[in-house]
Image (cartoon, rainbow, N blue to C red; front, side, top):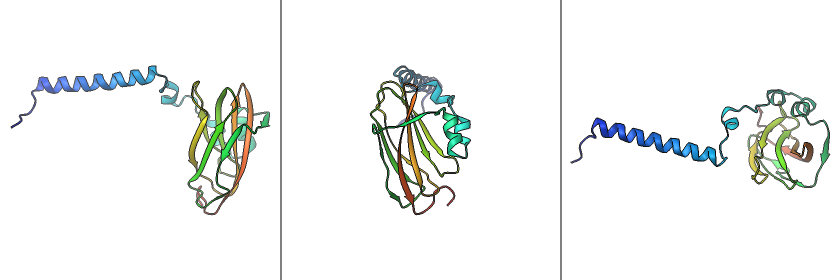
Length: 163
């Protein structure tokens, strides 16, 4: 028959558990997988995410000059049956990719997501986005201080942003 652990054993276990979790956090932080910026969302671009029209979104992210690029691969369905879950796959072959922006032109707030490509990460994203209606999906890539774009029209049959 097993007895309850003593108060000393219990506090020792609690200490060891806290030590293990702290060590895991330090190792994750040291490996570069976790940055304080990501924890605190310090890079939140409120102006860009709150923008209601495409021009304001582009101004908010600082994209004043944008060049079309065939080095950005965008895979999205031509027809999305449900706008609440539109699969999008993005690959950037542009050297030095720093940021990837996902924009759905006709969404109530066009900027859908921003991905920070920390040095050493492969610039590949696979996600699902929400679209309120049929629209162009734009992928902007920031590399070397310049912006590049790839676009694709996606027809939505059932709205996802309140539709």
